[in-house]
Length: 144
Ligand code: RB5
Image 1 (cartoon, rainbow, N blue to C red):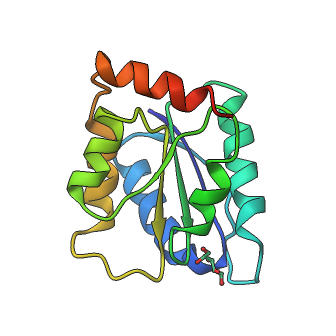
Image 2 (image 1 turned 180 degrees about the horizontal axis):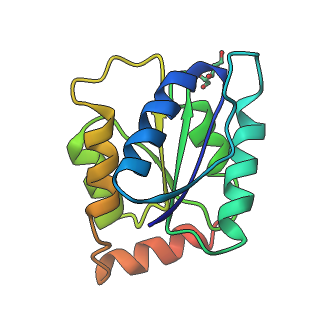
């Protein structure tokens, strides 16, 4: 898959872990995040990744900040983006199946109960189910 990833200073190690995991699995990854802990603003990182995604050629995107919250809020203000802040394997999978999420967000300062790489894999593997969910996603997309 073609994946775009970005992060702020609160998630440098997390981004690196995910990036290495994806590359090892054979995915093509565009890293638009920061690679050191100099402070940056998460809305800027969200815009970088979502603008790149909206140019086309990408399957999915991943965003990381300290909590996973701010960068998700920012991404969801961009037209065409449905970013799900995920916490576990269920939310990582269901956001694809029901919400056709094209981005997930994760937090570098969050103590998750499952490995982040497992959540990423669940997100990438799950298909959108369409049907009644398509109608709801269409309504989401009409909002911005
Ligand atoms: C940065 O300190 C932090 O606020 C940011 O990474 C994120 O947690 C915001 O939601």
